[in-house]
Image (cartoon, rainbow, N blue to C red; front, side, top):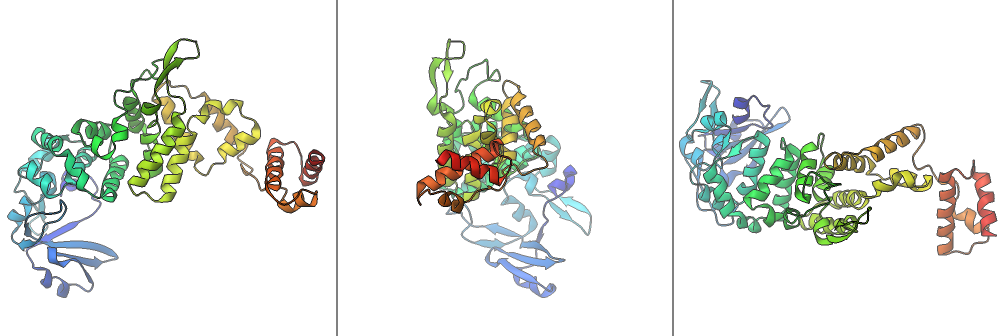
Length: 413
């Protein structure tokens, strides 16, 4: 109902009824007992699954996630157990009217996110509501009502009791769905939730940077701006942006700059950040393919400084990365949120255009059998000569397989 009142396309439809769970299956051809003990039955129609929940009152919550039991009741009492007022609205399709027991319509009009009843009780019942408050406010572009926000700050440590999988899913949804994910990150910091779920990211707040390269401010502000600049997003890009400078606080030091003057340096922060990101993403139980993609992007993000100096073979390997499109977007956002210089980005775009009609990384012309046939014994030397042959191939030192064979044979002798 919330989305309909706001003119938004709803992502799903939740149906509530006074009918007890046992009365629902006989009415439909196909149903699924999703959570019968909690009064939830799934109804399958036109290949869609609709959740039908009986109005209920929840007993005490003991695990910070679910009530120990439920009692079936009426709509008014059901509304009182829900998280936020904007999510506690009912719509009667027969009478075509909104049923509002919690002033949710007024909160939508004021664009305010407020818990139903006492915020402390709602967050004690389901601890994940702390993060959901940030997500809803960021997706709907609402402000969080002061008493609700104060309760989030007071109870932030409750998130330590939540499974990391649920936290990861909620954070990822926030980065992907928020209107301005950087502002969502700021809300997480101000609420105290960030130091609980991602203390390494919270540590970026206040970490100064050289103003000649980062006039926008500290590492946290830089990252916040980058996240707000994201257009089309996916999980790999969002987490790469968030964590790309995670290695700066632990590597910060004072040293000579290009002009010889002493400045803040972050030597090796890309590789330190790659290791830290791997630890964070593993802790949050991300699948390995996501971890590898994000860590590759972070580990490579400083290499863009040198692309115009790279030899052709090295450059082709660089742009041949399976994650290069994401790396390019990360670099573009990195530049736009700091010094604004896109010369390396433009250079790579031009380079990629030159390779548009051929594979970036062509199949090698030589194999291990070719190297063995030249008298190289089995072992690591075969691999070394294969790498050398491929480098010459990428550099254009040979025009075809036969000329490459001749070159390698000469070098081996």
